[in-house]
Image 1 (tube, rainbow, N blue to C red):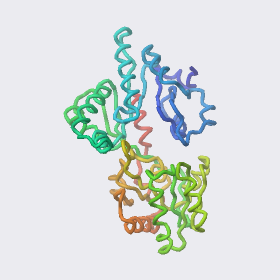
Image 2: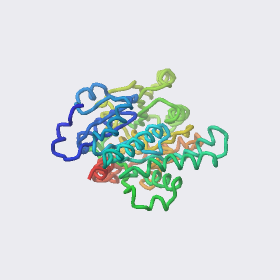
Image 3: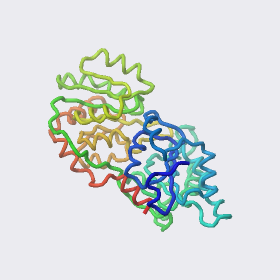
Image 4: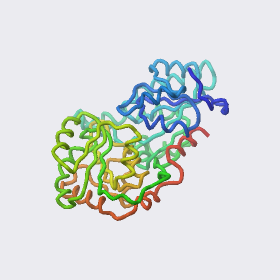
Length: 370
């Protein structure tokens, strides 16, 4: 496996294992603590061209990861957080492999994780199966707790995630010294150059064209928004299962532009020229919006945000003047929120002043690998 060009500067060998990799994960690597990046599958927005240019990025089978842990190839391995439903089976295997490797090789591979899961999994399992929640809670607590107990360091990226783990495992359990944990809000820094003069009254939808992200809600109310703000424009960037429906809908409206899966350079350009970003995340079986990457990118460019209370930073957004609604908010309330965002009057540079001086994910990485 290829070495990271900066690896020689560090005594510890480390790797990050992502079950699903996105382009933003690759973009962050240049500022993160040097190490190998292992991924199980590419997500919908993964840049294969960029990945092929990075010698320390590897598409791996899960068996390879287990082998690395058993052989202690790395001193430290970052794995997906234990409360994520889709990651739990692999995490159980990794933590067990780490435990077994210590029996014959002394010190095991140290495990660290970044935690932003804010879904109440036992409650969601109960709702999905129509069985009592009491059946699932002790089982999930046991499985998540098994992984959690074997992790060395944990960064909670939102207060909602910290509260979620506390509710499942117990406040007393989280108060223990192991694993060492801290809260670092997963917020971006402001972009270096923010354009305050944005002549168009443009609302941006960025991301997966999926009902979970609220695109159908937006299409339902957009005509009403235009009735009240005739100069308003809507730009949709993305791809997904509703692509054909969005294409047909957008083609019938002069105020709507739809760009299918544009490159990152185009996305950044469109962000710099929009006034507000819309992502009204909806409840879904076994899933809840952890934060929402489009929200973070919008904040970095000083956009007003229209989001639902599903996102793990909903409290922060509300406290800082953004529009946060219930996911099933009436159309009239949703229309009003979009109009407030578009007519806010706050300069993008002022919106971005609320962001931290150091990117939260970068700060978390520095804390995980001291």
